[in-house]
Length: 71
Image 1: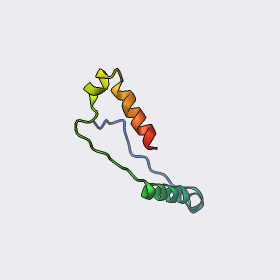
Image 2: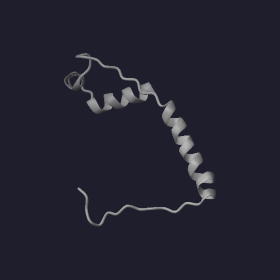
Image 3: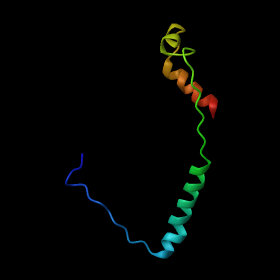
Image 4: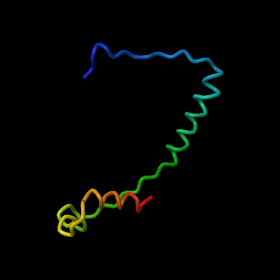
C-alpha cells in the first residue's frame, strides 16, 4: 500500500556520468537479458512431494538438485 512517506526520487545526471557509467551498465544488462534462456520441463506424476517423502528425501532438496543439475 502506498504511504505518505514514500516519494519519487529524481536524479540530475550529467552527460559524462550517463555516458561513462549508466549507459554501459544498461547496455550490459540488456545484452545479458537478451541472452537469458529458460527451459521448463513439465512432468505429470513422475516426481512429486509424496514420492520424495516416501523415499526419505526432502522435496526442497530434490528441487535444489534439479536446479544445480540444470546449470
